[in-house]
Amino acid sequence: MNRLDKTTQIISPWWRWPLEALFPDKKFDGQFQNPGSEEVFDFDSVISSVNPITMIASEIAYYPENDKHELFTIFVSGLGQNKSESSKRSRRYASTLLTGIANMNNSSFLKQRPIIAFINRYLDWINAVIDYLNLSGSPVIKNAAILINYSVNNSIPLNLSGDSLGTIYLARAIKLAKRIFISEHARVFDFKERQIQEQKWQQHTNQLINVLTFGNGYRKWIPGPNYIMVFIEGDILPQKFGMTPQRAIEQKRDDIKFLVFQRLFTEGNFEAHNMMFTIELLRQTFKKNQIEVGDFMGLYNKLSSNTLEIATTDEISWPSDMKNYVWNPDSLKSILSLSSHE
Image (cartoon, rainbow, N blue to C red):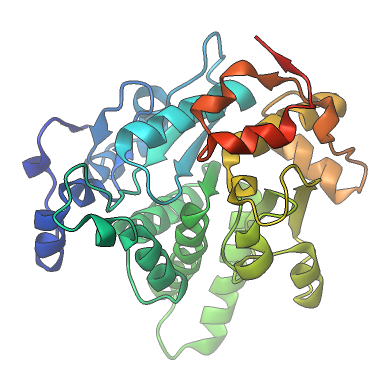
């Protein structure tokens, strides 16, 4: 496997060269990253190894202290985060939900010394809109699709997780994975065989692929994998642009399970989209239902049977360092009435 100390070790397609010249971090799009050491690993080298999933679990995934290394997830972060920031948030995710994390890098356009600062602040948002409209092709999408089909073809379970923009990439990756799988197993005009392969793909992914999203921002999720979509009431992204329980009913998608926590912030506060608050509520939900923290299949089964008791905001003992993970420090004022601990 190839640990990356130099960007020259990644061979990008020619059409990305101008983008990567302007924004060097973009060279790491779609590559694996260990959130603990912040080392970057070449995706092509990993996927071509003898056992990629084992390699990811043993050498790339970061595990919380004293963890048994029994569970890990491939995580795609939201927009506007450099490698250091996404690693910090992934470490928090790992320690809170007792889950190993291997990042699939989603590079930001943000630069410390931009030529035009005004434009710099909005490039990530412009990119997100383009991604939402299916008008771009991030390496994350292609690489995640390859990894999904590796799991399907080799009958190896795979857990995927995404936050915000990362959920858009995952939704598109799953759709691409299905298309690639069918094309690899059936001829273009053999419609009967393509239908058979589509059913096989759905059956295999239902058995093998688990997807956990935070603040999902996409509505078109391909049937097959086991989906749990988590967000806080008042989060504008899923409510305006993503999948919601109401939309799932309209689409007859009872395979998608939802965990929607009660409102924590005032109307219009974008902090409701901050995954760092959501994972604290999710941790308490595990405990409240006597499910081992991190047992997502146990959580899925409880949701499927409509027996899950969702944690409320007044049950949370908020860590004292939450100020290090907020976008706007004033947002904390709205939860000062809740308990906190040092």
